[in-house]
Structure formats: structure tokens, C-alpha cells
Length: 280
Image 1 (tube, helix red, strand yellow):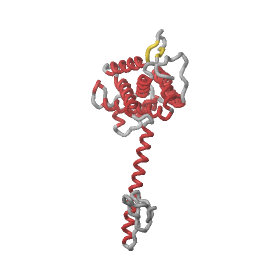
Image 2 (cartoon, helix red, strand yellow; image 1 turned 30 degrees about the vertical axis):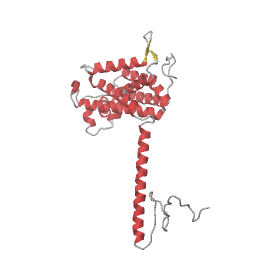
Image 3 (cartoon, rainbow, N blue to C red; image 1 turned 90 degrees about the vertical axis):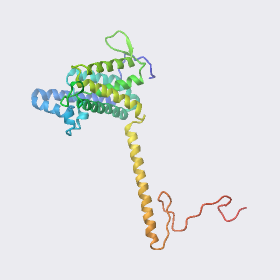
Image 4 (cartoon, rainbow, N blue to C red; image 1 turned 180 degrees about the horizontal axis):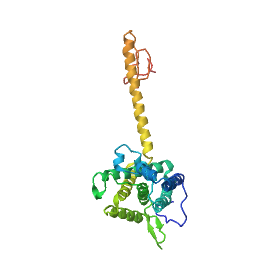
């Protein structure tokens, strides 16, 4: 679907990873509801261990940088995030593929968490390292920013409003609301996570190659690994040459460490010299 095309009233498809993320969040939410009903103390301990608590992260609970995104404070919190994930994330996954979409989502989730931890230790906006943050809103705001950039002129019908509005204006409005909320007492650190997710979504689109971080990392890994193996081969060739000289034998290797025989390597031809000993 080209950019700028007006969105119809048809619902987007449930793409593979969007469906799995929604299912995972729903299962975690209702499991915690049941746990709270039968074991209230265990519920609060589990939320404290899996939610994002900056003081705990710096104490070694690094998994909280991801797990907090699967916890939600209430049913409406869950429904809003999952609806946005479905409505906007499905388009991105359809265009990018599941691997890159999943990488983008968790890149924004992690970025939002790091921003949250950083702000908590500045004392800015009155938040502290003991403030708990839950919800996948950081990843959702990253998705919204990506949608606004890539499909900014697409018109959206926002129920119950009786008119359509361009996607880029919807994204700008949501970011403005988060920004205002971050400077209010009630806004708290959750809005900092929203803004952090939006920031990292923008960074991913502008700074990360189109094939994604996983591809770039694998290319660099294999490049470094191959360079290391070439260095080992050349080093072993030099050692072998030194060893053979002790026994008055000459062996030769090329610049890549490949064996070229025990005879004197051929001299480079000069201008006017042919490969054979005569010319016609």
C-alpha cells in the first residue's frame, strides 16, 4: 500500500509476531490477576521482580529492562497498548518482516527502559530509583513514531471522531501529551518511558541500516572472525618457514598464508618479457 493512501475501515491483519506479542501480554496479565486473587503477597513480589525498578536494575536485575514490557497496571492499560500494537504494528511487520519488526520493538522497549533508569537517578521531575514502571508503552510509542514517519500522510479514522486525520498529526499529538504529562506530578516516570521509546524508534529508523541490527552484527562478527583466521594462517606460515630454514629447506607462502611449494617462487615479469623463453 503506497504512502499517503487513506486507510479504509477494514481491520489490519493479525501478523505473526504482533499476534504472539498480544497473546503473551494477555496471558501474563490474566495470570497475574489470578495470582493476586489467591496470593496477594506473591503477586507484589513478582511484580517487583519483573517490573522496571531502576535501583534493582543496577543491583543486577537486568532482565527487568525487557520483562517490564509484559506487565500492565490495569485492563484498560493493556487494551490500549495491544490495540495500538495491532493497528500500527501489523503494517510495520507486513513491510519489514517478523525478524526486523521484533528487533525494532525490543530496541524501543530497551531504549525506553534505559531512559527511565537514567532519569530516575537524576532526580528530575521528582522521580526516584524506587519508582516502578510497567507496560509496553515504550515499544508502542516507538511503533507510532515509525508509522508516523513512514506513513505520515496516511489518513486515519479515529473512532468516535467523525473525520479522518493524518497519521503524522496523531503521532505528534500523542508525543505532545506524553511530554506534557512528564512535567506534571501525575505524569511520573511512565511518560519518560513513552518519550524514550519514541526517541529510540526515531534513532532506529535514522541510524540503523535497513537490514537491521542482527544483520549488521552478524556481518561484523564474521568479518572479524575471518580476519582473525587469516592472521593465524599467516602467523603459522611464518613460523613454518623459520622452522624449515633450520633444516636448510626453503618453503614459500603467499600473502594469505597459502603454501606455494618448496622451490624458488617465479620472479615477476618485466616489461617486454614473455611467459616463455622465446617470442614469435
